[in-house]
Length: 387
Length: 249
Image (tube, rainbow over all chains, first blue to last red):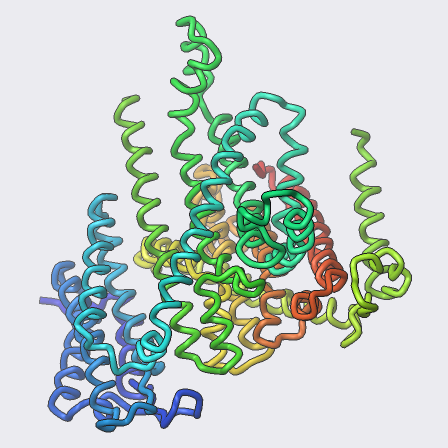
């Protein structure tokens, strides 16, 4: 049998070779802000475990390097990712001197590059498997459950990021729920306002260019400036409109952040509604008219269902964007995971930055996968129905 | 609307912008009501002109680097030799877009330190995605009869790429560059949270000292730059599209 190399595998194997043998696996620091000392895989783990991990990594890299069946590649990437996830926790326990509560162990570049390389392999396998939307959501749920189990089991408790978490567990969940409320709440408001506005723009030609231009210009205002600019008008509303302060409207805090996210969300929602409605085939509209449907019936019975996948795409853009932008709300006292990011940057405590950044990335990533799946399902359903 | 009105508005915006960054003192009376307790009206810890130029420089460097890398990658995955990478690169682009800018900035700090470098990295990564996506669209949606004609005329792969495929995709690639420049201009302001010298510095100084005039001047300069650059690149795009006989949506 002829041995053939897999092109992506060559790239992955090269990355893995560097990460496993040249880059540090974990960083050890005497306390949370001093510069760290690098530890390779064999230094960071008991000899037997370290050797085993290296053997697994090399074996999986070989599987990636040559043309091998997809199932084998799937198993190899999942096994390595699981081993890395378990053993970075073990490295935390192994490197932390017994009874020392100040010492910090965090994953180093080698670990992150290994995770990247094998996630790349896994992503390639999953792309080639061409999974159905439901199956993709299933993979996401399984991955989330696995990470949740690892967190609950406490095997990562000796890692620096979880020590940062342990110090502020209460505020973590409070800021997390603020973050989600900000992102989802402003999305909901944008949909409630944006859908009718989009329909109006579609029907009234004169509004079309004007509304979209204004929304386009709002998008060009840098987010931190928009957050800041809203402080003054909302502060004015709070002091001059009776009852506004009681509703929680204040110059700084959640209110300006909410309004800013809402303004940023309008453009994708309105623009996609307009594009979706414009894409409805003329024949479908004519047929509906011919059947004697009223304008309202046509909107809800024909145009809206046909435009739905495009509108959903707009909502996906907004949701992912909002989850990211909500981190900036922390700058004006609006809360959210950004609080930890900016605190961490201020204290040069990178694990605190990670405590804010990792959940944000995970949320955005999960939202993208779920909404992509929903979009694909509604689009295919439509094709099946019209076929 | 008269045809010359948009051009006149644009010209007025350019004049206003240049006047503001070179002689901010002229505008002091306008911004004065926004400050309290005799706080400074015009940003006083550095010249607005220098910050504007530094801001533009960061965006320019990052966009040029992102364009080179993204177009090279798109060319690679659309050649027969790189076709294997095509599906994966598509999903990577999708995943990449879910990373929030603040997270990228903050995570780049431990690797490269504070200042301009993390901002450049974040801008580069953010710039890559739209350009790559558009270059991919441009290179994969070429009219089949044109590429076949080029093949039939005996052009080599390299000639087809440089004389047919790239020129035809240029308008779409430019669209990606325009998007990434506008995103970059806004993201560069966030770079000031990790101590990059950009216009974000003015905005953050305003947030910290509760000075609305600072926030407004920083934000408006960036917004004006974005609107003008967006318009300018759109015009270039329309021009190349007309020359290539391709429609830009």
